[in-house]
Image: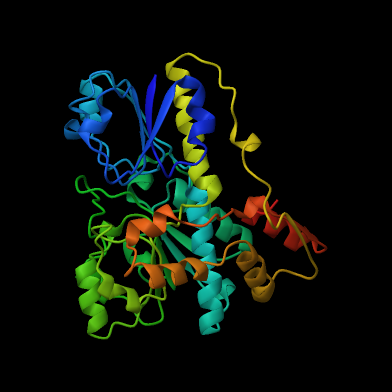
Length: 371
């Protein structure tokens, strides 16, 4: 079996090597001519999978994307050509949620506020928004959820807020897919009108899709003196982003919020399991057996969880300032995709075991995600 996979998929060889011949590719440079003999195609979000890409691939039988989003996949074309498709919903949701937690402790330190005193508005209550909600609940941080599609089903017992209520929150964190149709399209959800309503005391975080915010409107407002604090991990027109926006960001990164080792590898594993199901084969590989031990595998804390301890604990595992620094230093020289390709290893909270002598804090820390 001929299997082609994105070079940025960790453990692809370990998971898929048993099925046949593996060929790695650059996700943004993949062409139809490369895939002439392909039977399995495994991509990430930067590869557009459609008729144009697969027109020379008569033997293709399985396409998988190791990502939550699927807006880069022409699912209708795959279905019409009897090509099995699988994605990896929720694979990096924990990673993105922990990116947001790291930004919060960094900005709290920078601007001398307590994260425990803030209200967070979560736009999108799917996999990622839910993981963030769970971590905020563990910390006792007030937050509101906005998801009109989930709310309309009547099957979700959570309390949902209006968009207007979300816009009043101290921190607004975006976790929706990119959509352009339907009752609630997310493309430019934060347009000039919405952005203009935000105040200098608020923080806007985008770690979902760049097109959810009108970047040109945002840049214009910033140039005109808009004081709202920005955290941007995703950008319109990646990799050709509006570089003029970078100096206006508190934290800016190269679409790596979901790039923890666990998050990326989880996506690989999910596609492996899907292919095993298609081939009616019993899985004999697991992520647990492949992940290395964390360099900081255990830590002991004393005292009740507060801003200082939370700050130290989160930064010990993941300090987002590292990624912000890499981005600002390299994006102008090496480019957006280079930063993603050479992204240094990052672990999730769960890779570190925390021993703590306060029972209430122990519960909080473990529900936050630490072992």
